[in-house]
Length: 248
Image (cartoon, rainbow, N blue to C red):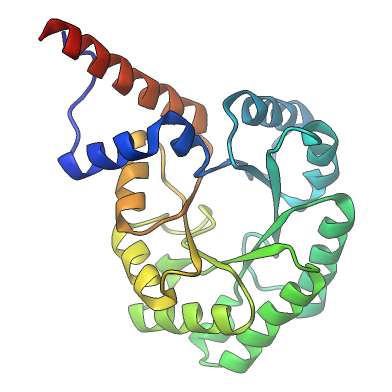
């Protein structure tokens, strides 16, 4: 009996190594839509509790509500800063990060100043990140590069600047620009930052196979709004394996 679609052998090995719980612990369960209502955030947090996702990722205005809903659950809160353009002043970004910390966030997902990178004003881009890191008071900071707007050389430079400024993760995309995560970008970012800095893939990750492809490329965190469907697909895979063994 075959209950599951085929997948690449390498991805199947990753899935078996991680198992369903391991997949869940890679995921930042995400809602960043500008028209997201309170009930959608409440549902997000309920799902995060039920499936034991690593974190929820939300716009900063929802941080306090998520803190109320997730206290004691073990699920972390990742709040966005300077989202989605990254083009506001450094002072505004730092203040937003400061407010997120006050409201109870555990992590900050900030958008890099893409214009500064394109202008080769690397000191400005680095200062922008370092001020958010400082305002985050020890919380883990992820820097969203928005790779679809950058050349490969600019991606490498952005990774280097992010690490030098104190970020502990680099992230592919906001999901609000021309395209989302690509495995080749994840591979490039992983080479750039080495083994000790996290790489988050986000944007257009809508199924289990794509998630596994990103992990294979070097991602250590996944941002997606289709987390529940992904977990259910992972469960279906292991059910199909169990049935297949019974039929042998």
